[in-house]
Length: 118
Length: 507
Image (cartoon, rainbow over all chains, first blue to last red; front, top):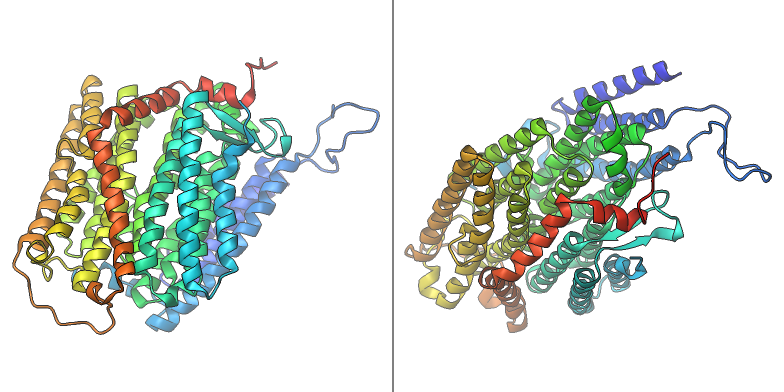
């Protein structure tokens, strides 16, 4: 399971960076989404994967003695997913606006802000 | 010491923003509420700094969960100073916005978003939890995304694409770094991490994570070679928005770098050298970039990059004296950069352009304004006794004692380039004979504004200029403050003890 996740995370990061380096704005957004998902999976993996051991303390015991599934990474991922959802929806709308205004999907055409004389 | 009221700067900005949402289309009510609330938050920030300065580090454990299990908010002198600077810049920008931002933009929720941005900044400065820091950064960037695109002009949208992309990438890298750090140390509390990370045996991995943090915050604070998005986007939104961005958004990245690299990852020789090289290159690339530009706001954007280098240099040398310089520079830079962008906004309203080749004759026509604008311009250069001078003095002294002579050269070169650029701006914009400009229809000129709005644009510049004069002329106060901050950064044991309680021995 860990090995599978490692390969998956590597693929997500690599494809995310690759897509971000393309010239199309839509691919840029796809790249950002893949990268965000890769980061979320990484938190999940590095929080140690423990199967079927919820962190619930028995009423007779004072504390957990056995290995248990850490709930913190899941809380972190949940937060990160919600945040990235908001940011990505904003980015998609922004790209749509940019396409409407500049009439191009090519990032290399977006250079009016870099011109020295304007 | 536990004090739940340290969260007040965050809560009050949230309250202001929510209150403003109830007055969505009533822009005059929004103007009034924003000004009043920004004055109150300035009062809160002053109270916080006074409290922290007298009573030592204050903490708040959210929900009563003891550190390191819950989210901790910590107000040390550094945090409180940053909150105060945020409040000062925020107030100036809020007052300036009431005069300069058009009603159409105000009706799209400009003031609520501005307050959400300030809330995010205060939160980032006060939090003591690394994941919480990430969340505050996200609040800051989502608010800044809205501010940079509000109005939807072509240049704004194009600048925003670059700005949004780089910030999202920085966030992803930051999140990756947090994931690996949590996997290694099993904690998110920064004070706890400080102890845990020191015990990790695999130093190679620790350095990798440190570099990931450096890249993530480096993009946000625009250090070499990750700065190129800044001059491509900061000149596109209205001047008031550029002012809050230029003054505070890059500095929150610098704050995070200073915090992380003094608390969690103490720079070793490799990291220290890397920071110094990056600082030197940042100074050089920012300074050289500024020479080439003719748009005033783009010049200032490149100067932001240039001066970020000074602060990173102070962190790279990592002695108390150099950190005093870095922190003094940070304090000076927030006030002056905010003011410079406000000045550019005022010049745009006077003349209708920001191209320094087309501008001219401002000194002849507006001598009082020119004298006022001279204060931030020449504070930036650091002509003694203005504020920039003292910071550079400490930085150069700090590098000299550590034998970093090349770095001294770069700092002097950076100051010289700044002087060159500012002298060029001064002679072109103020002393050159006026060029006849065609009257633009879509620009509302300063003379056409109502007197109240004219005052709203001049008063914040006066206030900020007075603040930077105070920093320069009453430098001993700021030096005392910077020295205390630097001492706390160099020796974080007080911070750790304040958060985790009395020394706990690890089994």
